[in-house]
Length: 497
Image (cartoon, rainbow, N blue to C red):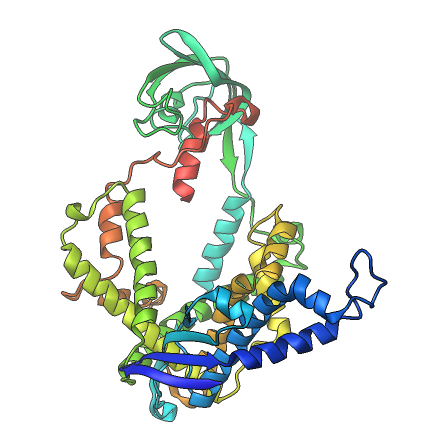
């Protein structure tokens, strides 16, 4: 193998590798010798096919495999010999005619183009100073959490037949919707329980049922939003003939021993203890988020080295694509924003550079200190991801198992958290008491008031113009859900997204 450096500018490298045709021929002979006893061809006894016949029949196919194997092995050996780590997958370009190489009449010559990860001199992490925001879990927070839990388990109790429905009550209704006097598909339902004020139906529907009582008939006049998911209904006025059968009022569960045991707890005290522990874990997670943000900022500021342009470009393209998707989802264009496209691109490229720099530093720390993700940790991460897709667990599990790149997406954040833990163990960490409001603030959001463009600013501007029911689902008969013509689905799905 002959290695010739063609160019080396900055972090960019171009190397040409030559493998003699005689070396490839020798590999072909070895390959044929290793398979000759297994080859079966018509007219020959098993294992008795002449070597010359094997070469004539399978030679080109085998040589193609040998060339691929040789390129992989020799390019990796070249990187090892040069003690270089490529930032991205090297680009390989064959020099000459592949046909001639396969026939054995030409050497295998190919160019390898890549960027290297630069040498990284790590800072002394024992000199890092980190503040960990701390908030004590007081009884008021536990009581609030219990009240929210009780409210989420509320029951509805039927009111007197003469009682008029108020906001927050639930009404049981039959309905049929008409546009220009004609009923439309999916616009009818029977015995549907609708909580007034829940925003389950399209705007203007629920408000008109406030004040009705059992036995009332009410024509609800509404208009479907212009951006409604079903185009045949979008923007059209409709009348829903509603019959109210029952009005029920909400009743929160009482917070007592019986409530605690209904949740599987031994006692109310045990339930409070469990709530306190959960709140503490939530606080701890938020606290870690702030401390990690501070750490990553210090790692970025405390290390200065050239960044592989290809890595920065890839990271920037991902960020910019996400930004464009947010604009599209919120029906905005770049010209609608206060900042110019050039300023935004410069801002996001700075974010990309920071991410690449901190990522390389964390990887260097992990490699230098042999920090590994165990199979058990990987399995736990996989199961957490699988559980995010109820009903599709098996398909999702198989997808990750069969796709190394997908598994790498699970491994990467686990590795990062372990490296962060390692650095925090070396750094000087001090507790800092803060308010709950400060703790709950998104890490880095405290800088939003500074005259400096932030990554989320354009998205927030876009969100202000977001239509209420833009993301309605595809057309589906609402009667199966006991819902009036996709009205509940339109609002609910929009909120979720």
